[in-house]
Structures are given as structure tokens and as C-alpha cells.
Length: 430
Image 1: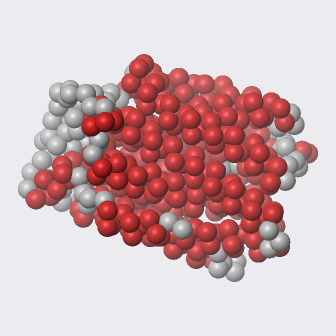
Image 2: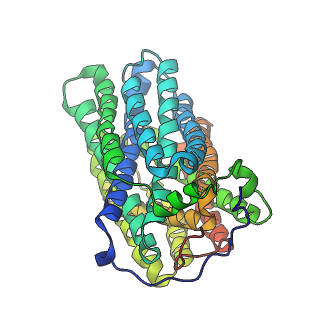
Image 3: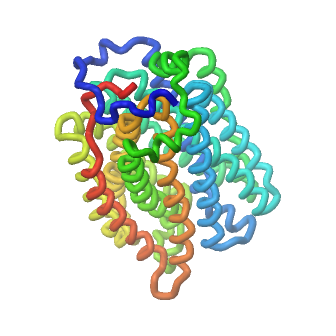
């Protein structure tokens, strides 16, 4: 690689831009990343919404349910690592469209599962595409949009995870409770995962590669082995810190939010809220509305108060709210009040991770670095659903106490973030 010695301290600040300066091509780029992330969320969370029905249909326990989610997250990590490198080699747009096709096809495949093994295989393959989508989409936005709008553009992209969750919740209520589909309703639910396939066709036709990637590609500035650069002397420290931050966040996030829908629908004697799936949607959807507002708010708040301080404010507050929410399972009014707050602080900080990781690495290894930073965290996060499922079965612990442990990970992330630089006002390193 000819660009291994890039100035990792970053270039100087650039002129401020406003949304009036954004071109149609830049808006299309953002729209592609937003829709890709929304459907990524939907396809993954369809399983989360259907855990209880799948347990009854196939006859497996909480540990296996957590393991199935863990398998998807492990392969998501592998997909993120792989597609990060692929996006550096063949382009961000091509990689993005490939990931969308993968997770669409595999969601439909999961609908045909005849046993737990087949379900695990299809969900594992779905995870591969799901993980790759973020690696390609987040870099695409960061390289296309002006630096002064990077925080806000990424907030818009991240906000669609909440829209995907709301879509998944609505579809779950429809196919699992409302329509008379019996025990097979989950198959129709997973079949809805085919919808994103249309997006892949649009992306390939209407979205173009970032100029900075095309220039580097034309100049032959490609890393033969990007990981040699990422773990080289200049980038090693920030690469390891990025991996640590992601690991803490993803363990806390997936450990908590994989199990919350099932906890709301679990019997009171098991520590849950004793709701039906349809009734629990009345609490999950307000939480996701809070998440949507949190995603959108992070960018403006970061511009006003600083990215790292805003991040710490979100994660520390999440650490406080989590045990309060879990202790209120039998108090519907409290759940309704705390749910949107938990959604706000428990999701909004993700709007920081995309631009932060993009700024840490030069163009030739940016997608690889971003994929590594985020998806090494996914490996830690992948263990969380299984760990929580195992702890739930330990006498004297239970699922509520297990989920309460995630607060410690939120607090640790608030400490680690101050070890990383904030380059939010600077152009990306080339």
C-alpha cells in the first residue's frame, strides 16, 4: 500500500455547509444508507419479536433462544469484517447492494425452516449480510456528506434503525396475533424480509461511489492487507480503542434489547409483565419512538455540546434508567413513562459511532477499519443474548437481574470514549 503513512491526526477544519448546500446525489446516498439500515433492523428484529412463538413451535428454552440470536450476531461480525474489506476493494455502493440482497434472501429462507438447525443456518447467513450493510453504508455517508453535516447525516441514518424496529413490531403483531395463521404465523412474518430486495436494485441504478474512493482507487491506493495497516504503529492504538468501545456498547445493547420484548410478554411469576404480543407492542413502539428521537437528537446535541460529552451523557443516563425500568415490570404506567426515555438514551449514542470510526482511518482502509471497529464489538455483543439466557436460568438470578448487569457496560463506554479523538469538524483523511 502506498498510503500507509497517512496523516492520522487529520486535516484542518473545513468551511461550514448547510442542508441547502447538499446535492441530490448526496441525498440519494443518504437515502440508500437509511433504507438499508431500516430493513437491516427489521430483518434482524423479526426474530426478536417472534422468540416466544418460535420457542413454542420448536420446543426450545431460553438458552437456545439466546444462542440463536448470538449466532446471528457472530456472523454479523464476520459479515462486517468481510464487507469492510470488500467495500474498500470494489466500492461502497456495490458492497451495500450485495449485503441487502443477502439478508433479504436469507430472511425468506428462514421462513422455510423445518427445525432449529435449519433456522440457525438461515439466521447465520442473514447475519452475514446484516453486518456488512453498516460497514458499507456508514462509510458511504461519511465520505459523501460535508464534514459540518456529518453528525446530523449519520443521526438521520441511525434513526431508521428505530423505524425498522417499529416496522418489525407492527408486522409481528399482525402475523403472530391478529391474522388467523395459527402456529405458522412466524413463517409469514419472516417472509416479509424479502421487501428490501427492491432497494438493492435502486441502489445500483441511482447511487454513485464517493469521489474520494474513486480517486484513491484510480491512483492504486489500495491496501494489500488492510489489517497490517490498521495494526501498524500509526493506527494500532486507535484501532484497539475503537474495538473496545464497540465491544462495551454492543454487549450492553444486545444483552438488554434482545430480551426486552420477550420479557414484556413473559408471565409475571417469571419476572415479566405478563402481556400479549399485541399489548406489549403498545410499550415497545413508544420506546422505539424515543429511540428515533434520540438518534435524530444526537447530531445537533453533539454539535452544540461536543460529541464525546453528549455520548457520555446518553450512556450514563442509560445506565441509571435500565435498572429502574426492569424493576417496574408490573407497573404499566411506569413502563409507559420510562420506555421512551430508555429508548432515547439507550439508542441515540449510536449516531456517534459511524462518523467517529470513519474519521479514525484513511480512505484506503476506511471501510476495513470501520468494519473491524464496529464488528469486533459485535463479537462481544453476540455473546450477550446467550449469556443473559444462561443467567436467566440460574437460581436466584433470573432475567431481570441479568439484564441489570448491562448498566456497568454503559458506564465503561462513557469512560473509554474520552480516549478517542474528536475530528468532527475536519475533512476525512485521504
